[in-house]
Image 1 (cartoon, rainbow, N blue to C red):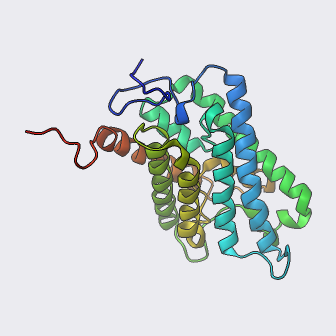
Image 2 (image 1 turned 180 degrees about the vertical axis):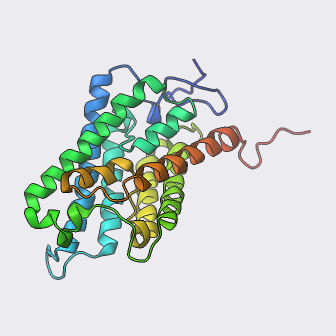
Image 3 (image 1 turned 180 degrees about the horizontal axis):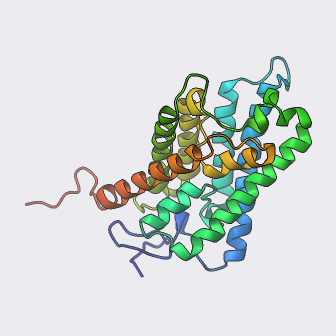
Length: 265
């Protein structure tokens, strides 16, 4: 077991541990963890795609309808709430790319990955079903963006869409690792930091790939709408970007000393 600080976080450079994000005790109760991941992913995906569907169908709350800005903010705000609500229970991965990245760096035993990922996909599919029920059959057609399924924009190649998904997931997972596993970071900033990171990703990639950043967010609406075109982009891209970010932070930055703390020579 790696050394930890009093809050349960892994000390920089201490190596693999069963301590998860936000000091959670990974594996202590996998049934509870799976339920938390299902509910958290459900809230995240439903919030984001509901706003996106409303924008596509031009359904206003008051005044004009939602726009692209609202979609990015909806995903970001939802993740802030989810991390604050279940971060201490499951680590609030709510994203198979985050789970895979943690496992790749030894911060999550691989044996727990199937339970996390299954719960995340179940939550996303449930969210898409509920969105369909709320907005009706029109939301499953092209007018409703096939339940706000992600896909490369017109004129965007698969390579471009893949690249942007790698980059934005790199940003998200880099922030997650920095604020949720490093004891030098004030725990109170974590929900806001990861929520803003997700919003940044959707802002960047929305016009290119739809800004999935999350295989579960992508596959939930795709499965329920039956629109599985380019699904591989939203699995490969986020996983590659997430693992790259986790390896960079874990191997290079996690053990670095803050400026001014270097030992004297």
